Image 1 (cartoon, rainbow, N blue to C red):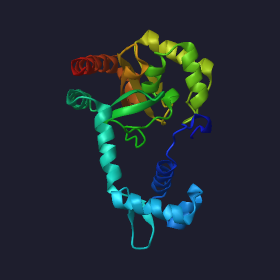
Image 2: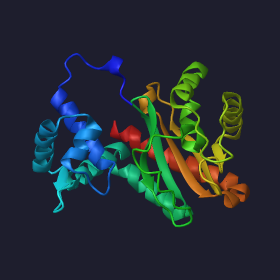
Image 3: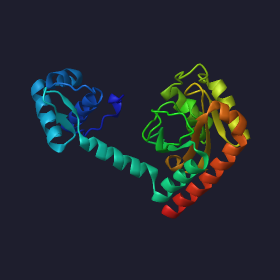
Image 4: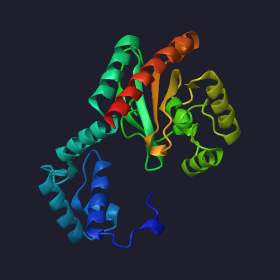
Length: 260
């Protein structure tokens, strides 16, 4: 949701409109006609036609034989570039792959980006349940994931409350913590444990554990590492999971230091 009060005085409206068109097309996997795009973006058909033709020329949308438009392959190229930039140096990816080979669990990195907590790298493991949402760029549900908790725990109480109020505490499952009081108590338990946990708070039957990779003074340089596994395995393997996460976190921290 864009904040109209934050609109820059030098906003280039044609660029803004083109991005709205692209977003609308991206939300419609079956494709949209120019008239449908115009209605959704509240633009004239003539303006929409010019924007769509430009986006098609640049490869960001594709016109199909039935006259509808879908997203183009250039989007995939930009996504790959985003994933590469988020992950950091190649050595970080190697550390994640080693952790997956060692444990069989999917591993994730996350950090603050533009004030939001987002997943910046993900490497899937065969022993973890498949979580289709947890891909680079995912920035929802920080209160329900161990990765989000590990990063929120680095904020001051005031900063954390502001984050939770602005983003809400959506109940993903019946186990999701939806009150500030319960969430603060959970974070405190994680701090004492030396590892943030969630058991079935984001997806039923799935657990996630996370530790901090670095505690940089700059909020947006703080990185957290997490792994996902069946909740039943977390109940019996928490100490082993923590030890392996901490070892991988140290490896990634070294990679990040040498990259600066």
